[in-house]
Image (cartoon, rainbow, N blue to C red; front, side, top):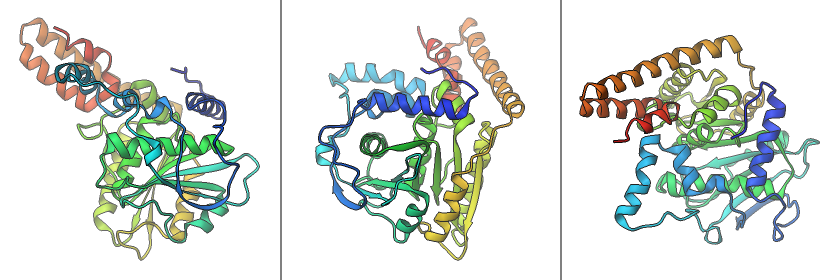
Length: 350
């Protein structure tokens, strides 16, 4: 993995270059020129290791869960395919503003709750103003499985737009509405080397539990340092306003401080309108610098808790209480996820 440095713009550019190289470092021969306007039923062809099954498991599953996959496959006689998606059978909607900004377009990869690939009403004019390309996949709504469809489709949407247009790596975002917002948050958490920020519209979850395990430590450190999160729900959507507050608090508990919450006035549970979208994008495009001392102190507190918990596992194992050790190890895996690896995986060895 790339070694992190304190230089934000340089780091982001290097990471974006690495992502682009992983996605095939030259433009696809069958990629059309920089088409602008609204395009429906777009079929892509570029794949990337970022959307492969192995990488999805590494970034979205807890280490102990991911470690079980080879044993499960061996027991069932199945083979894990390289990619979960056959792009020739998938369709996307793309909107590209007519005028590209001097440093390249921004990108909003959108995960919907509905099955259609559509551009929400009123968004085009705001995308024009911010110079953002929009891409969203069909058949990636709430009825679709996250690991095998929604996540890889969003990643492949980003990869293919990167191959077709000049993009500004500082302005590559993931977003979603309702259930799609929850998937967008998982993608922002797992792929901070690709997405600079996330627009989370009326859908939020806390992180660091069985449902949303933390990614490998190098990726999570980058997420803490570099990712901008904007939560926005309608003023009348009281359930999701509450969930936004819980989600934002969870982020701060895990040392993710570049978080902002927005309220869309006179709106219930609906995708943001053009006015609320403009406000959210304005917030998204103005990240705040992390306070190094605050971040270091927060990380140190987490490291101490994790070290103590793993020490308890070792003590239980040394005293022959292996069942208790295993139960505690599972709790640690669910709570700390990739932060506990590889030590947590090593402790499961017989």
